[in-house]
Amino acid sequence: MLPCLIFEDEHLLAVNKPAGLNTHAPSPFAGEGLYDWLRHRDPRWAALAIIHRLDKETSGVIVFAKTPLANRSLTAQFAQRGVRKKYFLLTDRAVAQREYVVKSALVRLGDKYTSEPIPAFKSQFAETHFQLCQRDISAEEIPLSVFDFSFGPRRINMLTAEPRTGRTHQIRVHAAEQGFPVLGDMLYGGTPAPRMYLHAAELRLRHPASGKEMTFSAPFDITQDPRWQLRTALIDPALTNAWRVIHGRSDSHPGWYVDRLGDYLLSQSEQALDDTQKQTLGSLMKTLSARGAHHKILPQPGRRCTSQEVSPQRALGEAAPDRFQIRENGLSFEFSFSAGLSVGLFLDQRDNRRRLLTGQVAAGFPLFAPSEPLSLTPARSAAAPSLVVRERPAILNTFAYTCAFSVCAAKAGARTTSIDLSKAHLEWGRRNFALNQIDPAAHEFIYGDVFDWLRRLAGKRRLFDAVLLDPPTFSRSKRSGIFGAEKDYGKLVAVGLPLLKPCGILFASTNAAEWPPEDFLSTLETAIHASKRKLLRRHYVPQPPDFPISRSEPAYLKTVWLQID
Image 1 (cartoon, rainbow, N blue to C red):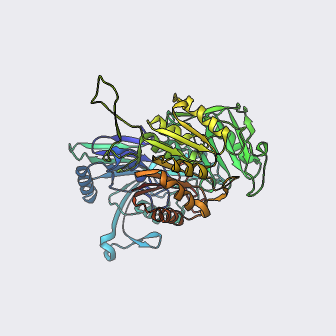
Image 2: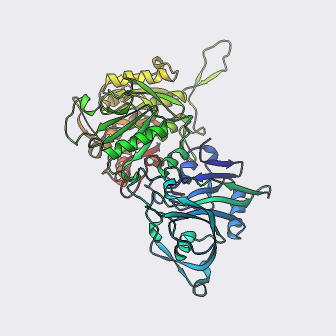
Image 3: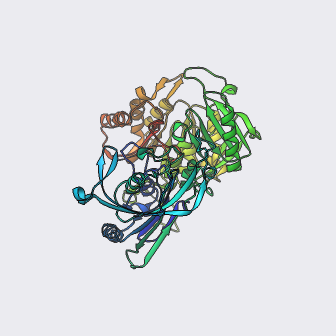
């Protein structure tokens, strides 16, 4: 059960959307919206339909249809204004009246909407009822400690807003028109704030099957940091205690990144921590009940550093032990701050590891389609001559590092082969297998150059149901020389494809930040075509929501799952 879920039955899914997450992805290569993230997460949500939307910075109740009946019923209820909605908003401006009824026409003007007289634009009619709440709010109640912002002595007013129509930006435009723009809504003249303080608190509708009136509600919590609310809405703490807490400019901290790793925090930037960052790190330690925080100074590109120079150093609290464990998607993984630049797991691949664990790539895209012919082997038992045994899927994990992908695939029942150029990392991988009660002896660990081993395995006519390619952006080996992702990814795909079974899955990922996703996909498709293989289907995924994508902090991780004939 995800923390953001409010209600689910056969027909409906009600969710408390956090601020900072789109209802749906605005473009093919943008971060996933809530709809995309849910729909591709679980087979029971594959047929989700969007009925209404909330703006990216608006939080609160949103309802999706799960069946055609629900889709038709809810669409009609919204169109006939049979759904009642109640919002809360904060403003730092004076509110002259207790109640307002605002009626106007909303007309689009660039990125904004303007309020115009109704007679000229009857088709864009919008009506909103506002009511001032009795309670005044102190600016100190709103979390500002991690932002360079202060309200000063101002008092904050809270209002309810009930839109009687469903126009885009309706509440925001009408509030600004009356002189009390939503706090944080800079598009319509609001004061800058950690988020836009508009919240869909309540939604009333009739159940599509029973006709019973239902009310879905979500509390408006203004005391929590919106950054924290985004993460805790989507990550189940019972299953996962490792995720990104601060992601650079997207979280108003240029060049600074903080991860939660179980009982410890890992801070990363190109400089030593300043006093403000230390204070923020201390606050995060209290919020997360962390035992200690370490800081790693990121090396300058091209500069050679010793393992000691790039290893995280204790900044606050207890020093982490040489080895400790984190929990992700219900599995355990070993971490170490004394291992150098990489400490055990790349958190931005969490959702892709879940895909291997669950066998669900995306809606309508199982990892191993049951409709495909099964590979069956006759049993050699005289007592049961008709018994057949299904062969386990075979997964090839290249550039395996600490074998986290392999652990997830093995836990799901696959036979895994992991290749890496580091014996130490492969031993680390074996320990990760053992941590999850998987016998590493039942799986294959190969030390050596990936390009060399791909050719050797192809020469042995080895075939795999899935081949995983997640190379470093830049690497160097004695046997294959220098590898650069943009220059050499096509060559990597070409030597990997002969190992892929017909209708097999090729997983390709890169964190080459300057490489446009269109060019990355073009490189893959060119290599597939040159190998005389046919691309059957494709699912592209960006980095997970705790690595939020913004104009100031663009996406860097590009991943695609490809089924190839």
